[in-house]
Amino acid sequence: MGFSRETNSYIQPQEYERYEKVVMDAKGNLKVVPLRRGKGDSAFIDTISFTFHESSVAKFFLITREFFPIKGVSDRDVLVRFSDILEWIFGFGISSHQPVGKGRFYESRWQMEREGVLYGQVYIGGQQETILVEMTGKGCAVAEEGWEERLYRFLTADTTYNAKITRCDVAKDFYENEISPDLAWQWYEEGKFDKRGKRPLVGKLGDDWLNPTEKGKTLTIGSKNSSVFSRIYDKAKEQGDTSGVFWCRFEQQYMGRNCYLSFDILLSPGSFWGGAFEICASLQQKGVTEHRCVSAKKRLELSIERSKQVAAQQVGRAINMMVFLGMSDSEIVDYLRRKDGALPHRVNPASFIIKEKRACEYIHDYEKEIEIIKFDEYGMVLDTLVDLND
Image 1 (tube, rainbow, N blue to C red):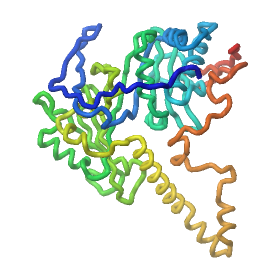
Image 2: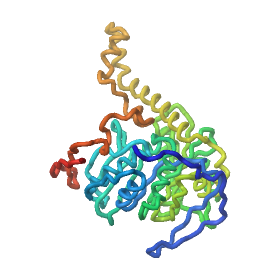
Image 3: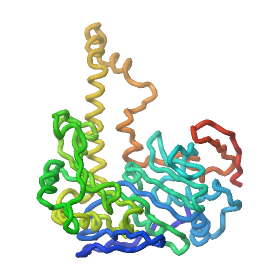
């Protein structure tokens, strides 16, 4: 990799704003500029999507490498180089080509994944020659430290054209009963989520609001058309916990079609989180600070416990039978364990950490032929091409 990973501290420790602003985009649409308040590192980015003009890839390489590597102008040529940039930003690149699926207006879709864990998707072809990148929550969680600043550097570079953040979810976790769906509902009725003198829409999702199912509950504030749409939910129960562990997540979803998303959200997500509602300012100094580390550890602990519970439910009686038949502990373990060494999906190490890179894992690692499979909209294979990367 020929890119420098040296970073500078762009994050400002405190930032306060009193009023939301409204701007007009090039099409005449009014968009809210999210209010910012408090410490920038008090929350973390859980999901992000962004677009930019595909010519930016070649331009970015031109100023960061001593040579110009792109020989052709095909989408695959662009993505091979962009995969290299993605590995520099996140620690992983593009791994495979997949059918586009319905609801997308791009010609091809590529995945970033390891061992069956989806980190993100890249779309290219059509749409005014733009590239769309959609990062998943797991992709953001396992990405190498400092990915937010490196992505900021790429999107704000003079060589990156028409860059926009189309979606960004900012989250904060709480483990000490500082907030819960029930408490948030009480605060909503007290007007602590009011904005500009108006009470936003509210919704209650999940069986636990009316029945003790232990499946969790979610309170939503706002709508998909709001400048910010919030979810406050039982994260522990979402992960399958039934032991009563407290873990509440307060998540805010910002959509570029409804508000103006500054690139600063990459460097200071906590200040955007703190400015969303009045109540957020008082919650900003509560909860955890090392979000990514603590959340990943908590998720792993709950996943291990849940996997043990599922195993007991599925094979507990069979083990009792084997003991009754006189089999030893070692014989039972040897008979039941997977011989391929595979772990349950919920505790797949790739969901928590980027393991050591394998040879030829991403499309920019190949030096000779790459087989490209073309799909139709239903996922059926159309034809197979062999492209050269020489």
